[in-house]
Image (cartoon, rainbow, N blue to C red):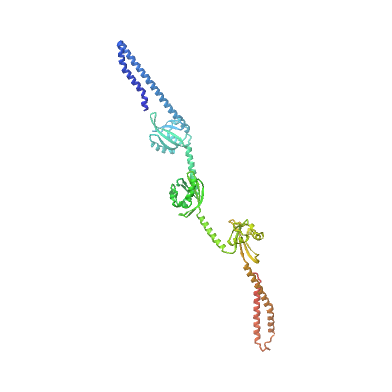
Length: 506
């Protein structure tokens, strides 16, 4: 259409000239009736000359104007090529020699225009990239094409990353390619640095012993570390890109889905503990909102939960044991505050103060009553384990109590508290008093035997010695009487020895 528009005026001129030529001859013939034949020929020649000159001048002006426009267009293109702030060059498609370069290319690569025109495309590439260029250049179509990312080399040997766009042209009659080069070195280096940081972060996340995975807004897993793989019994190849709730169908049970959805929608961090029953895994879950979804950091606390359960059960068993006694058991910290106590202890506290365990303080006891305890606490805090017996009066009767104080130590062998044990030993003390009274009576009996009974016995033995067996009618009875007296004396000696054992310690 543009070509037809450009020919419109010349065609009009030619059509007008032809019309004039056809009309001029009859007009000249009509006028020539009044002119001489020689004048008629001259008039025709002048007419033809005039038409020829007018047509020639008109065409010349048109051609000159088009030539100026062509030169202007070429100059504009050349100026555009030269002044565009992005490196551009044209190279021969056959031998890759540079045919033209712009100013930006000379600035970017460090070569002058004259130096560029002595080089080939392979000269601005690192040697290791030349084979790839030769293989790729033949596959570039004869139209506009994105040739992709490459590494180019400057005159000083420095390399940088570029994005190349190419188009097939004919330059000064030669098949050529016009190439535009975009410097993406900073972008590529940033991407490489980001990739390194991402790889470093992934290595860090893989090296930690706690689980971590990330989800996008569609609940698809975008990353999972090794600890999470192990805890969840899966591999990243299996789960990456999969919907978490589809991969773990029963994960919607419990608090998982509700808490994850809250973090996703409300953009808040949440923390909770939950059991994933199919795997029997307890997790301490920390969920954080991210730009595209949420990140889940969790600690496998399965063993901890088992230990807690065991501690709880052991505590229940121990509580059942210590509550199954009438003895008072309690413990205090370094500030003499009560840490724990059995039911008998709290019953005694209730009896003394009228308060429950969550209400009572040290101020609820009279100074005289707690003085012995506080003094004993201080003694036990020095590391000494000991016991004492105290006597007190309760409702008109004497009560005896045995108190044991044992230091409680931490992992560093530091005393952090005191365990206390109080037992009512009134009954045993009464038995002891009864035994002591019985022993006293036994000692009195023994004294009577060893002094009051043994004295007449000694007299009998003395008289027996004075008897003459030959003068007595009952001489045969005297030895028997002596033997019985000696046996009785031996029994008295043994009773005396046994009573003397009662006075020995222990």
